[in-house]
Image: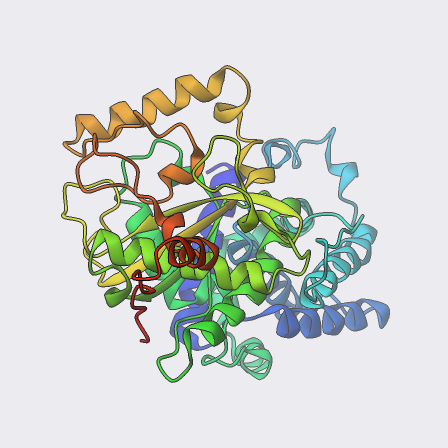
Length: 401
């Protein structure tokens, strides 16, 4: 079996092991274990089976948490002419580099602009660590799961395991449910994407409090997405927020208004003209696209949430969306036509006529050829303007769930 496939299967095995044994890690726990391994190396003790198991588990579970894909250099790293790229003495350097990157990710704080780092990506570093294992400890690749289950290793992993009730993007219920829906979509690009899910909705908090927690996760996601080339971030609300297309429009306007009000970059994008070509929703200094999925839609609708009784909002920053090879230059029109054709072929009619503005595609009408769903009519400014011109108009009701 080639090493790239072993890497992919190892990622899945680490995830399955973590779930079954209660050894899921977050950045803090991973950093502690990296310090442990570096301490072992400094004492010239990094040699036994427990150390090997800890190294492979950290590498593969971190790769799983950050959606790391196998690099092509894994195909050749064990060839004689390439082994010198991963000498035994290089391990501390690789471990320290991963520690630096994860430390940066663990300390992300909301700011007017996304922070940047010159540290290498988790994508690169976990691949390099796996290549080091393959070159220096090839026999270990055949005993991964049994090695992780050794009593001394398992005890150490459990001592650093994350709080299962705490939010961690890749383990969140939102993420786990959303990727199941992704697997069922007919968008040709969706299955290859890298996604995270937001912290779950809390019924004992207000709409604004829930959105504020989401905003913290969104900022972290956007920072990491730029480095690790993630594609999108999902946020879910109860089904009542999409009980009808009109209710989904109200909720979308309310969500974007609250986000705009706490935008760390203080964007005035909602003072523009949503619904017009060229308008963008900006947050933290970056523009993005929004896709909504609601319980109001039937199973043959492109925005059907695939049986999950939830309302979904899926955010995609332009800086990752516009770097997709299929959405650059003249390829964008071709790709969009392919996506439309794929949905139509499977009985999910999809139409962009009269929907030139991206914001006109945030929500889809029940019938594909109907006019765009003008969610922007429910923005506070639009309601105020309507009320000032016609005092008889009252503000639309808002769901308080």
